[in-house]
Image (cartoon, each protein chain N blue to C red):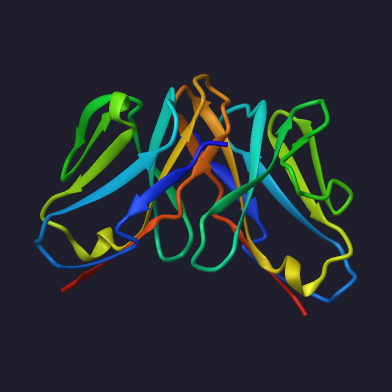
Length: 114
Length: 110
């Protein structure tokens, strides 16, 4: 149980275009979703925390207008990378808390901007 | 913010060997987790261990909160244990955000 389905698994896009990444909680309701970015051989860096029905909370240094997060329902959170550039190429991962001390992660999206 | 340091950064083991992975953190925490990231990027929650000791099969973890460190023990390692092990800390509560360490890359050779 407690599965987060993340799509797409990988995407290649051209510079200047936008890409949407979806995370769906399949068998539970995710009131809060965390979005991380991970560069090769580096740690996970929290980008933002999304809460259902309200605006996301972004970490310092993360551009709100570039990384649009929407959490319109208890089972779906989306991250849209707008006007993507090669430096946005990374591995993006979503996560939800299912109980105190218990986190479940999406399988990640590898974004390559060419 | 809180700092999380993991050591060693890389570890190579022969199958069947035991290992200890360490996580130091700079401030008191109410939430400490160990995760395993497999070579395909999937993260799995191993332990929620803000204090004390827990065991799950060949894995066990100990956190000494007063001394601000946690240890993850892997016994009789298998090739499937390969990957990156992350320690992450945060506040108490079901939706607390986590700060991750840089990870320990483990390679278990047959």
